[in-house]
Structures are given as structure tokens and as C-alpha cells.
Length: 101
Image (cartoon, rainbow, N blue to C red; front, side, top):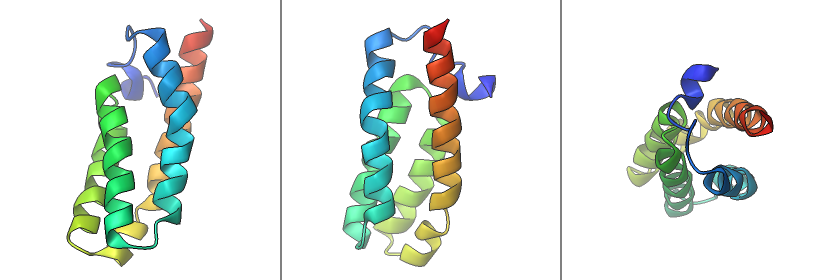
């Protein structure tokens, strides 16, 4: 799990807290998106947040969904959402643990 957080460690606490606060809404928007543009926008937003924190694995998963949605490959993009959600939850759990130390 620490490989998910190497870059996030040392980031300002308020940035991590903001990610933990808005990230679930971003993930919900990805899950709820019913059009390619909506999915692309939501994935792009979470990708940006993950990138700011240096969460490369999470950002890469978002990038893949973003790219597929941009190409209107909704079925392929949606097939990746459960994996993204698992990565997101694991990342948030690890970030919370890091903040608690």
C-alpha cells in the first residue's frame, strides 16, 4: 500500500484532507455518469486531484477511464470503474492512516 502513498507523504495536510473530503463525490460522479462527456469530465477531475497528490496508480486508472470516455468507449470505461473504486478506497484508507500518525 505504501507505494500508493510515496508521493503523498509530506504533502500539506489540508490538501490531503480536501482530497479525502471531495474525492468520494468525484468517485460517485464517475459511477453515476450516464454519458461519455459526463464520465470523461468526472474521471478527469479525480485524475487531477490524484495527480496533485502524486497518487500515480490512482491517477493512471482515472486517465484510462478518461481516455476511453473521450473515445466514447463507455462499456470499456465502465468495466474499469470497480477497480478504480477499490484503488480509491484503499488509497483513502492509507491516507487516513497517514494523517493519524
